[in-house]
Image 1 (cartoon, helix red, strand yellow):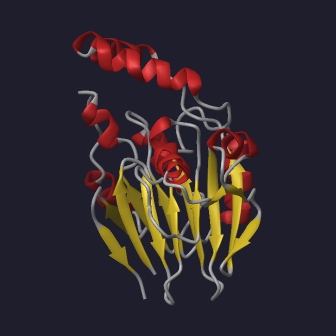
Image 2: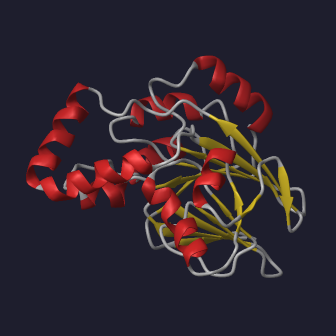
Length: 244
């Protein structure tokens, strides 16, 4: 399996035999078996939107509100099987849009780029209403890839962590990131999942840097988790990892 970071929140999963899946691609991913959309953020929907505007009718695994908004797609609500890969989805509670410190940072970003901020607000108003989802992909050989996205933060209910860890824990690979400032909460929650390999992916850094906002580093957290006995890798934007 090859796992590539496409930039922004985007990931690409490639399997032996040529099957490819694109998760939240920031641009048209081209010919893939399916596009998986995990939320209604503009950055997560852009690739699927570009694919529909190209004249193709892509397969899209997402909540019905998202596929209806995208238009001419082959909607495939989870659970579903694509090319021998079983895809399941689990809604989660997102981090609050803005805590008090984050609200000040977003205000500063808006003041520095008022036209950019106005465009983002206008785009947000047109997006469909849908909660974010985490994904579990069961590969044809039985191995499991879990993509928690940014589900783990200080507001994540303890019962959600316990329930999902009980069914999705012990995955061969678990990919996850966190929203800015949520690193401690993330570390506290991720232990429950005990994956064979944890992949920390920077899912918010590209967007935040584009807005002139601070970002967390992944490597210090990866080092701490490795020291605690959790095998951990870092997947930075524009890089890829290959697994046997």
